[in-house]
Length: 196
Image 1 (cartoon, rainbow, N blue to C red):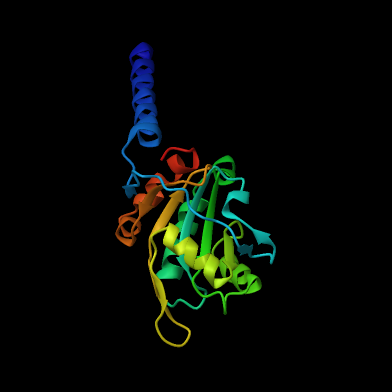
Image 2: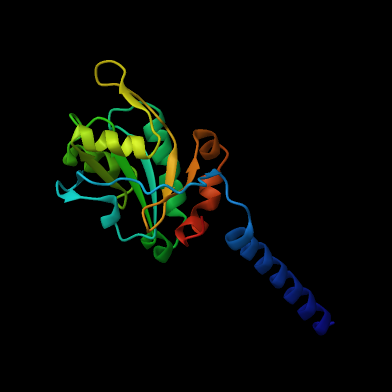
């Protein structure tokens, strides 16, 4: 009887281990893979501490990049909320391998201090970048993101989350539909481990 129970427990443990390994290392990732893997521009930025910086200065293996602005009433806080909840589920080593980045589309209003205060509402580890309009427009173009002023204090902008690898290449893009379906939450652990 003890032998049967031991065999049964071992079988269950192996099955659960197999499911976990499949989910982390083998399951297809959500979002859309970027086949061309363009190198994204990152010059002329200012981080949320007011220092000249670049995306490539971030030491994380994986960067999740989202374009938005601090006065955004809907998609920006919703997206950052989803990313914050998913990020909280990661272990500390996984968090150190992943950086969530907000690139503003409103550099006139979104000062470094404004970005930092806004991002702290979601997670202190999240990073914000502003810069000169020309530099930010080059970033938008490099990420294939549309952004334009849509009235006083409002912007129309792309709402995807781009996955950037350590080399600065775009590897995958998640849409708002992907976020709503929980795909980025499901994939975040694998992305933090460098699986794209």
